[in-house]
Length: 300
Ligand code: GLN
Image 1 (cartoon, rainbow, N blue to C red):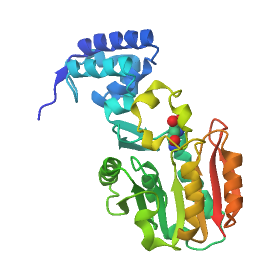
Image 2: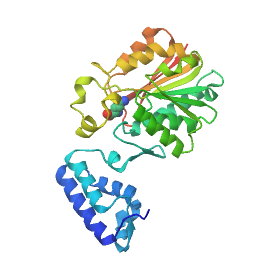
Image 3: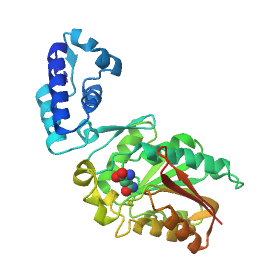
Image 4: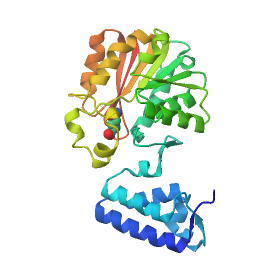
C-alpha cells in the first residue's frame, strides 16, 4: 500500500503549529519531533537543521489529518505520545505499546544490567543458563532484555492480561526472540508450577503505587496507563509482598530475586525479605536519579 505523502514545507508548517500548541498546553514541544521521527521516518538531525523542508515528498505512516487528530489527543486528553505513535524506545529496542501495557520506563532498563551483575557476583554455577522469569511482563520489555543479555537462558514471561501478552509476543517475534521466550497467561507464578525449585532468577517490575496516590500521578499516567500495572494496593506493597512470599518455592538454591519498587519502599522491602527467612545478601540499588529503586536478594 502506498503511504500518504506531504511536502517538506507543509510538514514544517504543521510542526511549527503543533509545537506552539504544545507550549500553550504545557507539553514539551520536543515530543512533536519524537512523533515525527516515528511517523515520518525523519532523523533527529534533519529535524534539528530543518533540512527536511527542502524535500518535495515525505512519506507518512499516517495522513497529516490523522496526525493532527493524534496531536489533539496528546494535548487535550493527555494521551502519552508513545501510545499515539504505538511504540516506545527501551534499551536499544523499539517496542510496540498500546494502552493495555505500561509504557516501559528508562529506569527499568537497569534491571537487566543488575540481573547480569548479580549472576557475575554469585558463587552459584550455571545461573546464566537456567530458567529466568519476568513476572508481569506487560510489553515484554524485561523478558526481551533478559533474553538478549543471557543467550543460554530459557525465559518465561507471565501476565494476567491477555492483551499485554499478545503485545509482548508480537515484540518478541519482531525482535527475533519469538522462539526463546515462553509466554504464559496467569497471575505471577501460577502458570509456572512445573518450574518449582528450578528457577535461576526472577525479575519483576510489579505494580507498586499506593492506590490513593494514583489519582495524583501525571494525567498521562493516571488516565491512560493500565491500573493493573500500577496499583499496588493500600501501601503499594501488595504484589511485592506476594513475590517475597512465593518466590522461595520456585527459585533454586542461590537463585536471584530482583524487583523494581517506588521511592521510599526500600526499607520495608528489606524487612519483608528478612522476615521471610529464605533470602540472603539482600541489597538495594539506586536508579540514575539516585532513588532507591531496586531490591535484590538470593534464595538461601
Ligand atoms: N514507574 C511507574 C510510574 O512511574 C510505575 C510502574 C509500576 O508501578 N511498576 O508510574
